[in-house]
Amino acid sequence: MKKYDIIRNHPYYKRLYVTWNHMRQRCYNPNDARYKWYGAKGVKICDIWNGEYGFLNFFYWAIATGFKENLSIDRIDVDGDYSPWNCKWSTHKEQQRNKTNSHYYEYNGQKKCIGEWAELYNIDYNLLQTRLSKGWTIEQALFLRKHQHHKKRTPVNN
Image (cartoon, rainbow, N blue to C red; front, side, top):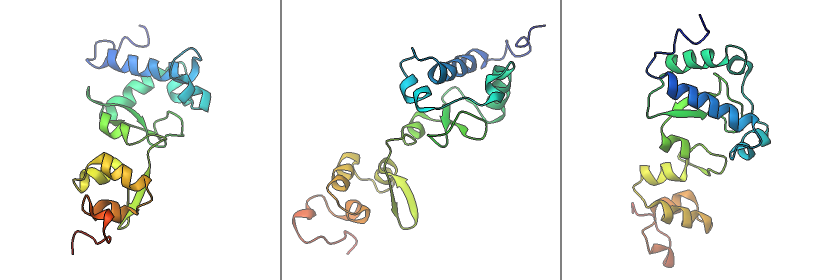
């Protein structure tokens, strides 16, 4: 019996194998288009997922941690390695908010990226991003009316 025969007929086998292989390519293959953002920056795969039974271990971890077809692997610490302790399954939207170029702002004891603040307060993302890039505080950017920046800055809630 070959080492993957036990899982080969699982409905997620192929998708997870492709995910695992792509992860390995972007970390270890300098010819991969994404290598510059992973392997070239020192991102590696833990021995558990990269050894002789690496895919089998990855597969069981994936199933145990809630893999679904609409999710992809996401590193919790974007500067960290691929490992069971630093990975989770995320939607595309969640992944877009967990990138090295994401900017986080703190307001009322909560730290969120621009997209999360825009969604939470129903404000246009581009408007919020523009205000913040002009030096507005997160509170001003979230609560001033659209054209109020030309006048005295008074919060909307007054």
